[in-house]
Amino acid sequence: AKLVFNDTNIDACFPLKMWVCVSNDFELRNVLIKILSSAINPTRENFNNFETEQLQNRLRNTIQGQKFLLVLDDVWNEDGARWDELKEIIDVGVEGCKILVTTRSHLTATMMCTKSSNSYLLERLSEEDSFSLFVKTAFKEGKEKSFPQLLEIGKEIVNK
Image (cartoon, rainbow, N blue to C red; front, side, top):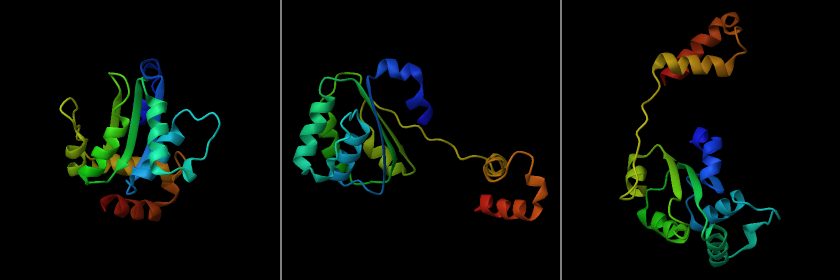
């Protein structure tokens, strides 16, 4: 998702790009604040004091007639009614707008798919690739051999 969002070809397709980390917080008001904050906000307006209806109107005005890409990252909400509520608000852009959702929940992915969208299931990293990523993250390049006891602990972490 990050590679897609940051691709310069995407910039040419979507004049408005928004990235929101949702996690467990799929309360409409909070999601609206996050979306508005990630949209073009030159005045750095603080939306925390807005009522939900004001947030809805502001978001509709912001995206009205614009082709946008919205990334909803790490969504855990499995309540279809909440998703429908948000979808109704953001359904005012022009044709070709895209919403990219990342989730670890198959139910969430199924619920958020529309007739014209697809769900892509990513495979887990192999144990070997996971350990390689762990080593690259935990140690400076080439220094891991100096800490064999930490490598063993790292293997246990990766196995979990």
